[in-house]
Amino acid sequence: MAEIVIKGNKKLSGKITVQGAKNSVLPVLAGTLLCDGECVIHNCPHISDVDISFKILEFLGCDCKRQDKSVIVDASCVNAFSIPDSLMREMRSSVMFLGAIIGRMGKAVISSPGGCELGPRPIDLHLSALQKMGVKITEEHGNLYCDAPNGLCGSEIHLNFPSVGATENIMLAAATAKGTTVIHNAAREPEISDLGDFLNSAGARICGCGSDTIYINGVRKLYSTCHTIIPDRIVAATYLSCAALTGSKITLDNIMPSHMVSILSLFRESGSNIAVSGKSLTITGPKILCRVPTIRSLVYPGFPTDAGPLIIAMLSKADGTCVFVENIFENRFRYVDELNRLGTKIKVEGKIAIIEGVPSLSGASCKCTDLRGGAALVTAALAADGETNITEISHILRGYDDIVSNLQSVGADIKLIKE
Ligand code: UD1
Image (cartoon, rainbow, N blue to C red):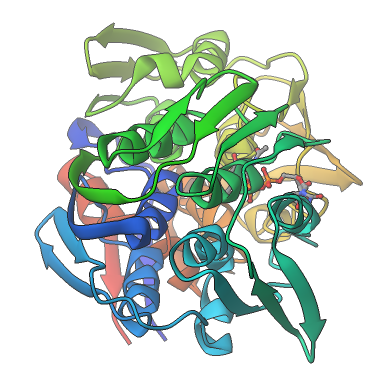
């Protein structure tokens, strides 16, 4: 079994270039299905979720090529409309392909994505929006059969929660629908704006991304385009946590400070010094991390749920007790038992984690339960005395491009032991 081995308690120093955002690239890759011709996507991370997206695109008839950090997808020969269950199960985000496949083919078959490591992840908001746009949906034997016999029609859609995935799926379906779609109470995450920018560069007519009302005037077709994925704010938060917890100074290149306001203010509050210069920043971690008032995960621009595990790992050595309230996912704290093996003192009560600061951490064997929980183990292990072995690292590889070599390049004693 592959594992990551870390000998902790080393100061980090140097520079890391932050990868493109996983949560942007996946819907953008789904969007290439709508384009008649080649799309070139730059700043595309090497992560296994992108590999699975490639498999889905190729299964549907696309030609996909990778050249270092750029990918070229040619969707001119799309000839299928179903995603096999095996691929659906490999990646929950495969539900992102639904709106795009219906937009391109007029119908789609996918298996129900079901639950995941963060708890139940329903798609009722995605489905009811598509139904409003003229899609007939039936569920049989765990498959969803979606058909738009008269094509997709623009519609007024009110989301009762600003779901990121549902907003993206509706944008993808509406880009080439007949007429205008308006999404009320839309998600405002930067990844939504990135998808909007990509679709507009291919000929879509979308405005209002970044606000809670998005207008999509359907066009007949989308065309070849070139797009650069925004930097990954959660990966940036991961390296910031590593620096803060080890009291180190590192520089991050390729970041968007305006996407990270709630994250950066928390790092400052807990004692780190952060100097921003254009698209890079330098963090100097404190000698002693300060406790911070209660943190609550919220929709953007609130504190992101995905950064929760990293911040909890960081606050494990704060000079007091901190509280984190998880408001987005029901079952996001499975990694806490694994983190506690390293000597953290974290108690979970429902959606609340109580983090009692400890003076030191110590290496142990532990396993990843999910992507960001796995990254939290890496963060804590870097500050722990002795050796930590982390298994089930496929979770980490879903979203982190070169985490091991990036941390090695700033002086961490970390290695990847392959199977
Ligand atoms: C979520 C995060 C996103 C993060 C991504 C990857 C939020 C708001 N969303 O996006 O920032 O990058 O995970 O980890 O922080 N829900 C329903 N019905 C639906 C869709 C969602 O009830 O049809 C509920 C979910 O159960 C959950 C909440 O809405 O409680 C968040 O959902 P959503 O934003 O859709 O999740 P993701 O798109 O996965």
